[in-house]
Length: 414
Image (cartoon, rainbow, N blue to C red; front, side, top):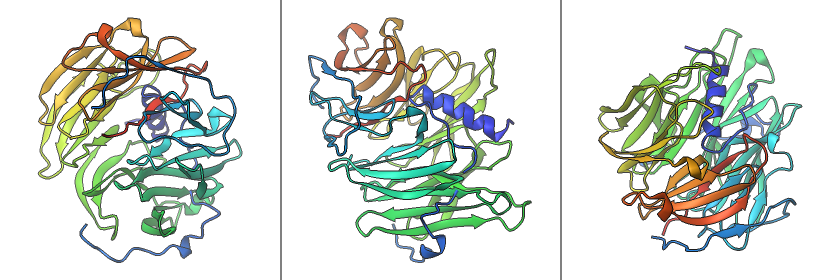
C-alpha cells in the first residue's frame, strides 16, 4: 500500500502518457457559489468509416484566446496543452487558459455528442473553478467555484444533457464534506445523489466519484481520502434515485467500462515511485453482470497506460511500456473474454506515442510527438499494421513543455 498522495501522483503520470500533466489538488471541496442546502436530494427511482484523408492538415499555432469558438462535431478533437483543437483545415480551437499549469485535465471531459465540454482550473491561492462550455457557441457556465474546493468524477450522461460530478470541501479540515451532484443543462437544475459530512475529525472522508455514465447507470469508485490506499471498489448507481449496488469491492489503479456496460477493464498492481522503480501491473476484465473476471496481463513487468474500449465494446486496446518515462513499446488488442487478439509494435521512428483511440470503423487513431515542436495524428488499420501505410491526418504545433497535456478527447461517430 502506498500513500494516497502517491497514488494521485502515479495516476498523474499515467495521464501524462495519455496526454495529461496537471495534478489534482490535494486539498479538495464545496463551492462557495453553491448553497448545498438549496440542492434537492433525489427521491424518485425510475428504471432507468470515415474514409481516410490522404493529405495531412497543417494546423497553425493558437496563441490568443478566443471569446467564443465553434468546434465541429465531425472532427477529431485534441487537447493540446492549454487548448482544444479540432483536427481540420479550419484550425478551430478553444483556449482553456493562458497558463497551462492551472488546467486539471483529470477533470477534463467532452460530452459523447460533442455538444459540451467540462474542465477545471485552479490557482496557487487554492481557488478552483469548474466550467462547462457550449462547443458551438462558446457560452460558458460555472458549476462550482471556491477555495479549498476540488472536483472529481466529472462525467456526462450518454445523451450529453446532464453531467455528474463530485465536489469535495475541506475548508474546515475537521468537518470535511462531499456531494455527488447531477446538473441538467435543459432545466439548469442541480440535485444531490449522495453526500457525506464529517461530524468529528476521526470520521473518514470517502467521496464517491463517477468514472463512467452509460445507459446502464453511473459507475462510481470510492476514494479513501488522505489514506494509504487507491480507489476501493466499484458500484453501479441509479442516476435518478442514487440507489447503488456493488460490482466489486476490490481496489484498482484505474477502471474503464465498455460502452455497452458489460465489462470493466481494471488495472491493478504495484506502482513504486522513483527512477529505479520496478513496475508490476496487471490488467483484468470484469463481467459486470455475473462478476466473472478474466486476466489479460498478470503481474507483467510493464506499465499499462492507454486503456480504450472499442465503440461496440467487444475489444480492448491497451499499451505497454517498460517504465514511467519511456514511450509505449507496443499496443495490444484483447477480446472482451480476455483472449489476446493482436500485438502491435510501436515504431520508434514515429516518436513518442501520447495517445490512441478507436474509430467506429475499427481503425485506430494514433497521436505521436516526433519532437518538441509538432504533434502528428495518424489513422491506422489494425489488420494491416504497417507504419509506412499509416494515413497522417493532421500536423499541428505542439508544446515545448516536456509533460504537456496532450491527448485525444473526442472522436466523432458516423
